[in-house]
Image 1 (cartoon, one colour):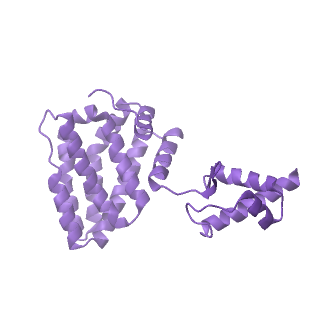
Image 2 (cartoon, one colour; image 1 turned 90 degrees about the vertical axis):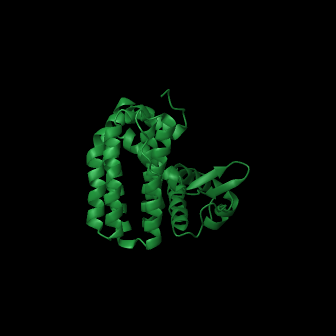
Length: 252
């Protein structure tokens, strides 16, 4: 038995390495159990065990009747899983907001270094679309405002050329909207935050990365209480359930 486990582990390590170095590419069908058994000079039993282990690790997808495939990595799902881990490991709303702040500040610094004139023109157009709804803010107008604000920050993050970062920023913006009632009660703070967009745009245009990070941090200094309150009023486990599993929002 111990010998079989050792053989199985050897197969796991070898296939793991071949997947990482792209000898077997994302979505590619692996050789059959019989073919792998011949390749490694073993019976099909340790091969089957190795494939199950790789499936548990998320590297291989077993499709009964079809074969075994290298898992296709979806950065959006990976970002969701990491966010769920933050919650399940005892993360608090403030932890999530702080992570969000760090990501946006760093992406703003990167954008200041590498932006082009066409990027600046895009940022300005998106900024102009962020029309703050008059109070009392109807839910549908608030959603339009937040979508425009999200696209503004996503456009900045895209200059980092990091798809995982982009997915995180999208998720953080989306999660916040699950308690839009709490947000509507703090429209004065939201307006104050929005005013920092002009500082952020100017800093990126001047390629002043420290000023760009400061504009983001100033925005979060105003909004941190709003964000954490919004997440606290609606229990965090409910926020994640609603976002990750697609449950509908409650009444406004």
